[in-house]
Length: 342
Ligand SMILES: [Ca+2]
Ligand SMILES: [Ca+2]
Ligand SMILES: [Ca+2]
Ligand SMILES: [Ca+2]
Ligand SMILES: [Zn+2]
Image (cartoon, rainbow, N blue to C red; front, side, top):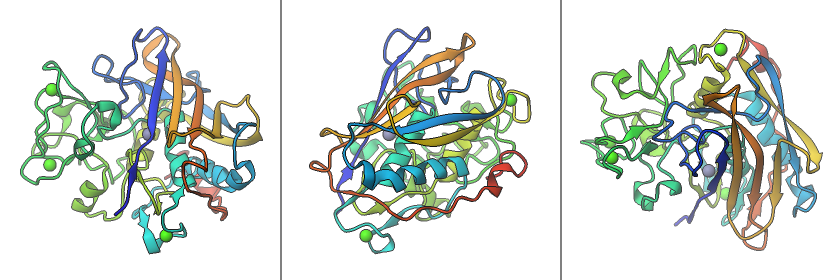
C-alpha cells in the first residue's frame, strides 16, 4: 500500500486584488470572486517574447550536490513543454527505490506553482476529505459548500459530475472537454472555464486525474499539477493538461495566441544563490511547501504575476528522497517550431 503525501500551496497575498487569502484554482489565486484570473511567471510584465525565470538552490539547503541534476531536469521539462502519456511510472517501472520519494517529480510539481499553475483538483486547500480530492477544482458557489456527485459513471472529476452551483475553476478545451488532448490554438477562443461552453452531453469540466485519464483512454497518465505524490512514483514528465494551462497563460494579457503580448517562459538554473525568481530549499519537516505572492500586471485584476516564490521540500531526516542522477535530453528543436510546438 502506498502512502499518499501532499504538498501545501501557500498563497501569501495578491496586492490590490484581494485583501484576504484566496484559494487556488487551475491558476494560482483564481477564486470564486476572481474565477477568470490567470497567473503568470514573475518576469512577465505584459511584453511578448522569451522571459527568463531564474531558479536557484538556497545556500542553506541540504543535499545541494545531490539535487543538481534533478533541479536541472525539472527546469528542462518545463521549458520543453512536451506532453507524455503515460507519465506515471510506479514500482518496478521506475528507477526509484521502494519506499523512497522522487525529489524530481515533487520539484516539477512545485515549479509549476512557482510559474502560476494551481492544482486542477480539489486539493487540500478545499478542506475536503482525501476521497473527494479528485473532483475538479472549484469554488463553493452561492450555497457556500461544494456539491459533490460523481454522476452515473461513479468517477470523481469526470465530465458527467453534478456539481450544483459550484464555480468551475478548471479551464477545458471547448470542443472536447478532454484534458489529455491539446486543442490549437491554446487561448480563450478554444479554452474556457464557463460551463456553458461544455459539449452538450457534459455537465462539468473534466479533471486531469489518473482515473479520469484511464476512462478517457489514457492509462497511466495524470497532470503533474494534480496534488498527491506517492512513494516509489515517477511523474517526471508533463501531461497535456499541464501544458495547456501553461500555454493559456502564454497567450498573454489579451488571451489570444499569435499576438504581440505572447510570451514563452524560459527557466534558467542559476546554481546556488538567494537572489533568484524561484528558490529551492531542502529543509524542515513539511513534505513539500510552496509559498508565493502575486501582483497585478499593468493594473489588470484578471492577470497577476507570481512574486517571491520559495519552494521548501522536507529534510532528508523526515523524507526518504530519491535524487535522480540521469540528465534528461534537451531537445532544443521543440522550442522553436511554430513558436510554441508541444
Ligand atoms: Ca521502484
Ligand atoms: Ca463522474
Ligand atoms: Ca456549491
Ligand atoms: Ca496574446
Ligand atoms: Zn501542489
